[in-house]
Length: 237
Image (cartoon, rainbow, N blue to C red; front, top):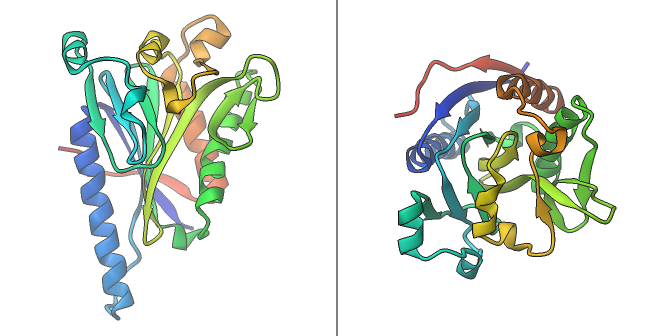
């Protein structure tokens, strides 16, 4: 059975985690290239990273910088980092109380369909939310997981943005559990200005056990990809 090597990196700066992803991603692609040239090597390991970031805004490669509503001076005063990065999607926020997931996986070992990949990540979050009595779904044409997706008050609880090259993935999802939602007022989240953002804490009216949510989410990811998730021993630097 295939495996995802799992690491919970705890609270980690965005830049150090991005560098770590890039190193894993590059090594996996180099291995795929070597295999295609005829070298006898095992397939790249598949990784799943969970992390929490200090306050940071990230803008996707085709995002609109006008969707950041703070000046560089205001960002610095508020202690918020900002990075223009190499994933898809527009601008989003990461911070404490949010589960950020970075699957670095070889889709050729599963299915070569990026849309199916995104829908699979969304489904893992949808199934996790259902365990807490929170009904969620999708909105046609908009990536992510939404509450009241076909009603009068649609609100996003998880955002997705990925990079894929030679069917290797990096970046991933941001799932609002106990997130301070006030930071989303400083951006146009995902470039969408007519819909709200929410969290599990806001919907349930109380703080949620994040470790419990992580365990449920890991299980759904494992089931949807039909893998075992095992603890990796390598640490981010």
